[in-house]
Length: 439
Image (cartoon, rainbow, N blue to C red; front, side):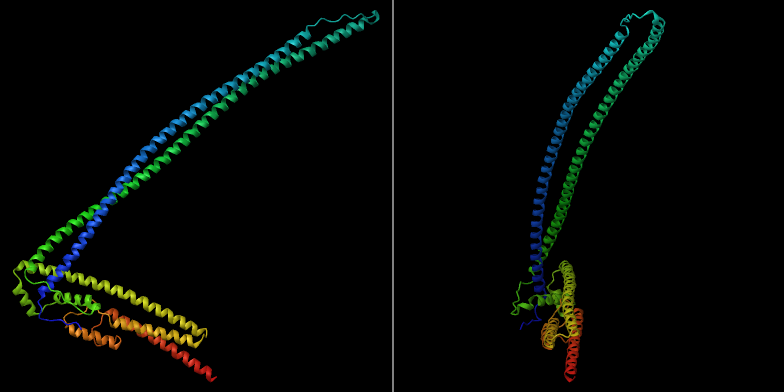
């Protein structure tokens, strides 16, 4: 069993604790140096990535310009080709219109020649002279009317054909102009849309790179600041350690029970951090060499006290989480057993499940009884602490007359309730079995 000698001076403990703190600080400095190195590597990587993205952006801009130049050249070639096709179509329409007009003129000329042809002399008998003269006059009148009608019709048809040709020509020209303008607008719209999409993509990439670079620089600045603060702190601690190593000698306490080393070290720290007795204060006053060392020791003691309080809070939270998870698991197991009771399953399986729940609850109770928190009162003697630990283990966690941590107390109550519920279910099942057997 580990024993503690009250005659040891607190200065040796204090120096050993400070040396441990210095080792921890050195490790933290090494860790921060590694983080700084990683940050520098990340910054260099981001710089390289930024340069690569800049090169890609420049190349993409050049490609876009080349594509635009190619599209303009392609547009000009197609425009020339379309204009040539339109000119050919215009010439073809003009030739057809001219041929139609020539045919119409030929028809008009042939009609005029038919009108100017000489009359045929017909010899009739004298008895029919009067009738012939009358008939010839009537025939001349009817012929004049008939010949006058085709001339007007041909004139009107010629004017209508020319007007129709002009209207068709104007309509074709307007349609061609409209198609050219629509093609031009579509081409310009597509080019502008492609350029806008490319510019938006490049802006997004540039913004992302700048954000990553700013974050990396901020992290680097923070790491540098922490590194400088740690350097200052290490310098102060090394100076303080040199002053205190001259006062006492370094001693290492060996312990056989490895499971209680960390807890007993914390009780040591709590012992010299707490209210020191008058004898220890007198010895510290005799060993101290001035007000400067006292101030530094008080500062380090306050810092260590704060660390112990923080460790106590973290330990309490972790213990409470573990305790709630264990109690929830046992409660769900009880609910399953209750459901099996309602469904009238086999009694052997139910009793086995209840026994398992009770054993697990007792194990949790034993673990709570063997739990020594960091915030354990350090004014008491360590020997009595060991005795209380043995008594708690032997009694199965019954700590009604002692100062118990609130996590342990709450755990005891929860476990007792679970054990009581399991016992009630077991008794109810046994009574139900007896009643069924009696029936």
